Length: 171
Image 1 (cartoon, rainbow, N blue to C red):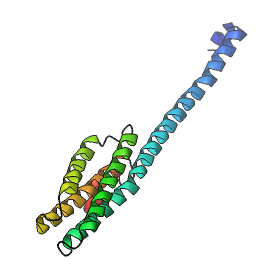
Image 2 (cartoon, rainbow, N blue to C red):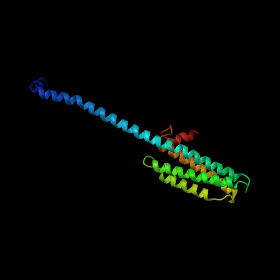
Image 3 (cartoon, one colour):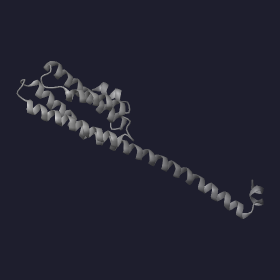
Image 4 (tube, rainbow, N blue to C red):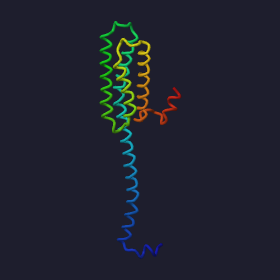
């Protein structure tokens, strides 16, 4: 080994030393870049999920308000029913806009289109429909919204458990 180093020129020795010093720096820089890009993606997913939270709350409130009007005395709340239906349509449009804006980060198109179809069907039903069936339809829709909320929180990494099933099993 000693003869190998003594036979090399100073320039070659310095080049080998420089390469041996630079290689770990390149490796560390690459690891830093990968970790930073992973953190940025995680943050973008979380922000996309947070953008869904307020519109989903308004949607749940609109459906619950409409359900309470349907459950009330028949024929007395026609104006309130129309206002609640309009609030429901506005909430659906707001989530449509959020879905369009965030579809690059969260792939919710199929789940949202199914829920949207239920919500549009619900908004098209009138106050004179079968009350019990209408109330059950509202309750099923609220359950579907909660499932959608769970999917949003799972895909956006907003839930604390890496496995959502174990979290919901504890509930």
